[in-house]
Amino acid sequence: MDAVSDIVSRILDAAAEEFAGQGFAGAKVEAIAKRAGVNKAGLYYHVGNKEKLYEAVMLRLFGQVAGAVEQAAVPGLSPGEALAALAEALAGLFSRLPMLPRIMALEMASGAANMPAAAMMEFRRIFGVTRGILARGQETGLLRPAEPVFVHLTLVGGMIVYSLSEPLRQRFAQVAQAMGMRTDMPVGEMGAFLAGVLTRGLAAEPKEGGA
Amino acid sequence: MDAVSDIVSRILDAAAEEFAGQGFAGAKVEAIAKRAGVNKAGLYYHVGNKEKLYEAVMLRLFGQVAGAVEQAAVPGLSPGEALAALAEALAGLFSRLPMLPRIMALEMASGAANMPAAAMMEFRRIFGVTRGILARGQETGLLRPAEPVFVHLTLVGGMIVYSLSEPLRQRFAQVAQAMGMRTDMPVGEMGAFLAGVLTRGLAAEPKEGGA
Image 1: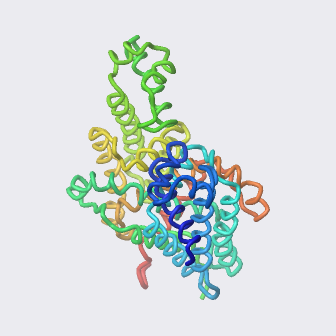
Image 2: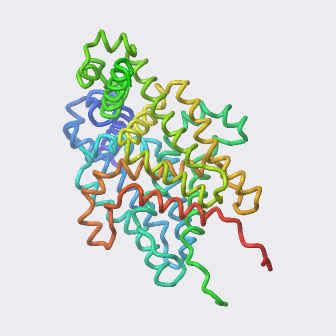
Image 3: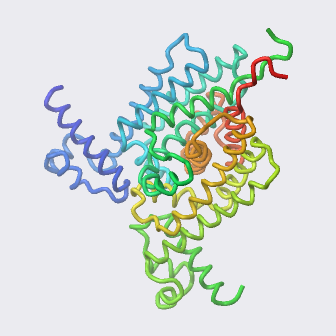
């Protein structure tokens, strides 16, 4: 990585942390510069003001999500395998990027007031993967019809809330244990659970008198 | 309702709106008093400071959630019917109380720093309902084993993120439509989708050579 893209990358990492911690409204450009180890003039020169920083962070994050889900949906997988690969890719993102569920939750709770249009366009790729898996599954008679938005938000919603609820689950752990429940599973296990439930739950009904 | 509980109820409604809009850190007691149409002295007298207001709002909200899910899980339902009733009750709460997903998301994104211990105790009732449905389903051989926390957070996570994503779904609606996807379904339809997927996805495998 050359020196400039190294600086930009450091600034965007710092900005992602700050936005995940404070939300867009609460984030301070000065705090981002400090985290990144650059001065404010350098930060403005390399990326820009708070809006530009947010746009760049969101574009990079959703670009990573889109790239990861597109890579997961390799040709030749059965619908069940593809849903499992999609869930695994998303769970991997949530483990590697703990700021992702936090930024998403804050952005959504703010009424998506600051979501950049460019980042929205990555949704086309992200939802396109889920839609493609469902369409192929329905064409081949293996899956029942289902709205892609419901399927995708079941995966993403389950993992966002599972990730974000970690501190609550920790506080609830003792009571849960006394009730015979576990609360400490990593998000990858939640991803596998969601994939299993969706695969079986979306499977087409076996044909009457079929082979 | 007598005059005092009417005032308290107005204060808690106003506080719920303010906390859902601003989060705990950003909420202003003055704004709550103004929304409720009481002066600050009256607000402190009837409920208390910001911490007390938050505690009372969260206790009331999670008490409502616990009451609604307990009412939904009436005896005599099959596991599938019980899961559907649970999903319907939760979807009803999310429709009636739009501040619920917002307060939950902000509280979780803040690391659950302000979640009152008393409100946490309602989790015992809430998760107890899901655990009870799964336990009866497993005892009767109708459901496969599953972690109650995964099942519950699939329902709640899907509905929180589906509700919160409404502004994003609206902005994405035209692109989605061009891709053959709908984004405008009410949260009740998401609840029904989740109930169906969970019911089929958690059903025990048919016994080999069974009747």
